[in-house]
Length: 231
Length: 231
DNA sequence: CGTCGTCTTGATCTTTCTCAACCTGTGTGG
DNA sequence: CCACACAGGTTGAGAAAGATCAAGACGACG
Image (cartoon, rainbow over all chains, first blue to last red; front, top):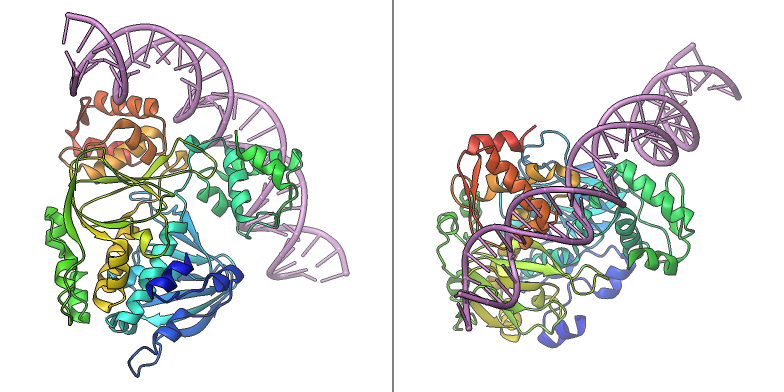
């Protein structure tokens, strides 16, 4: 796919290789050079695990580009005061708080799941900057990619709990370990309660497909996992 | 929010009023004027209800801007051969098949739920065109808006079936009628089986909150619906 | 007017939620 | 350094919700 972009003349803002390796290169720095003497408005900034980058409903002040680590997005479910559920996990190469480009307030609450390295930009700077074509192209590509990668949140309709868990592991962990995140977050992403997730993981462990510790889920037998996944 | 955009100099590509009235103005036509003598690559085209605009996995040839009607997006669930589930409904003012800007193939299958009016552009033209800043800005805004408006697909975790249905109706139908779509699609969006949706609607009808016919769901008592929604 | 697909309704069975107790690793203060 | 409290996670038993299977009703359309 990056081949076609090159053919079309659209520079791959985040080279596939870089994305794959989670290299923390910020695509904006290169984009900012295009045709105008202006510094990239995005400056490096780190957060510790469980830090809250932005809060849904709050006035938007910043936009982030995620270079390292993972961030979970929570959205208040309409009238569900309090209890916000995670609905997607952003990985390196994604934007956080990009809704600020289009509206005054954040829609989602963003919470770091791991220590996180970002580039932050002040909203005003980013808005001004996006008016030039280069930055807009970058943002456009990042947002489209994010939407492609975002899998619809599964529900009971998409298979039993163990199956959904197996599917997620097959996708996210492959042969290695699953990205670290609290059980309640993963449960939310998979449309089940933490207790159900716990049971599902236990059953996969019993089958010998995974090893589960409190802080890690490691895939032992991908084939076995696929069995559980399919059918 | 549109106020702030104006202040920032970012022209509102889709005026709020127009969006609200579902007026089918294509924002690209105005954007295409900016600074260059080039015609807008998007040409009007209509589809009948249940037409398939594009198929997930197929080589991308076009990108659509939706002016009138609604379109459902289906995604093949990993290994679930066949049985694709709808995961979002696009309304006027959204793009369809925008993944073509970033990759060679469509990710989702797009099906018209109603008669639909669009502007279509050939992928190559759109790619070329997006390289200029103006079009990229427009695309960027549309995609970000779409992601904001896309509610995470609810699961049993987000309340019982009748509750989820009530919530959806309160959001989508307000005091009037719900957007027309097959039951199986709505059921998919709400993370339940058609049978369950049917029962949920029946229970809301029994409570006097809605009137349900085979082809229409009309809200009678929004307050009652809200009761069902909350708690 | 008959056929077909979609939707509804009913009866049953499975799954998952719920509530509760218990476990375990972490961090705290004595 | 140890005891202890605490949050997050696990496990168990019971109840409820939804899925499933099957039969019928309704509407669209030829």
